Length: 90
Image (cartoon, rainbow, N blue to C red; front, side, top):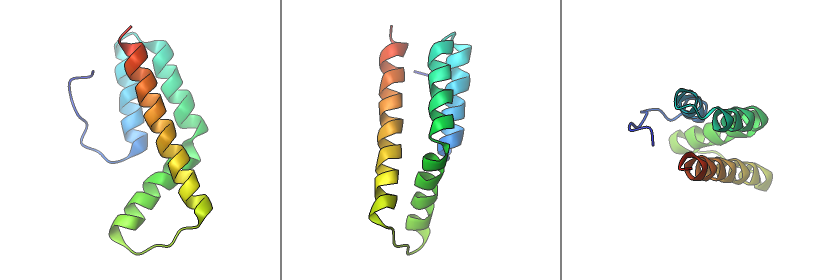
């Protein structure tokens, strides 16, 4: 859609890049949807990202609730991206 792939791992940076792209493409309603999602899910997105780094670079044990938080955040990101893809084509 954007014609480029940002080389970052931060979910916040990726969502920020998507927000800026959507605004420049005159898709303000979608941009606001991304901003709202990032704002509402900020804590869970941070935890998902932090879990990725901790799991990749060290040994960490997580509780079931932690895993559920990560799954919920990841599913939210995937659903948001699918929404942007489908509405961006319209």
